[in-house]
Image (tube, rainbow, N blue to C red; front, side, top):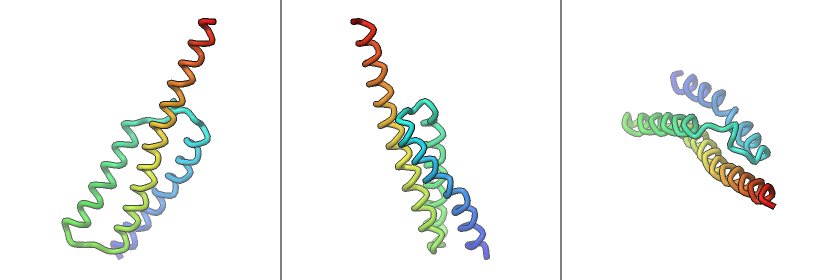
Length: 99
């Protein structure tokens, strides 16, 4: 029963990540994203995965942890892509203002 409850929590929490990922991809800006928050969530998932491995309690819940971690890592990649978009846009604005 504990595995079902843990997996349910991870699934409910994890459903927000694909939505957040798509929002961030469409936004093309990192202004609404928090690097510290993303890294904290990644650390949490890594800790959960570590707990599963350390306790030798490897079951289907580990797959949910790994899926959530993968999507949050995709958000991390999008953060840096969007940060580059922001820098390019700022540089373009400066170049335009100089002319």
